[in-house]
Picture (spheres, rainbow, N blue to C red):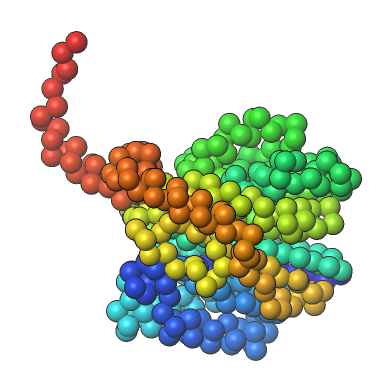
Length: 368
């Protein structure tokens, strides 16, 4: 068996038009950079993807997680693509690049990153998910269903390789701490936290036997990093499947329910996460609604990703898409009122502080 690192790194470096898509010239520059990295031997294989206005680099290599070489290559690539975006006057050119200089790792600098080492099995199905117009906590419910809910994943009941459950590493994005839960025995404890996805996010799922990572997410929140509104986070996720892990169908099944996530317009609204094929990954209605694509790879033992399958380009998700559209209609009718608009403590883009300062002298003690 070969051991490789699978890295998925994404960034929004310019939108065409607005926040809806990526200009072909930006994608061409991305393809050029990725081809150079493979021919130089930096990476073993790659696939360049996108969702909405985000460019996604999917790579196999042998440099290990958090490799400065790999992360610098991605950073330099996003900088090069940003220059193309600026020449074409693309919207928000370079908005995910929160520094003028690379500091050793893209984490905390804007781009989203999910990666882990993998001992490739004789058959290694992997699904890479990418979402647009939402935040990292969007993966909490799907990951819970995949690896902890027997109503979704029957393998937890009838597959002896899964019956003991899994470990979940949860990040506290506000206090920058983490905790590991063992499920099913700590299920209720974990749900207390991951049910608040704007703060607590599942970072990894691991086997109980050896702590091997079998699912990973990007947990960066750009408005937390920058201290101001710079993007909607647009997370990525990697999930390994089959043989003691959720079957491919079990890993996709959670998205048959378009659950409500934060993001959408200006990163400040709730909306349904709609599963779509890559042909429909361009959000335009109120810059949404939020959507997710899934690319399936059959990773070879020499680290080759091969051609992906577009897993949500399947008519069996038509009902989920229709439900998402119906929910979008319902929520949009709320306009600037909650629950469509996020609560004030969650909003990434708001005039609330300025308005409060302006009116502070007009607030007086209320009579009983």
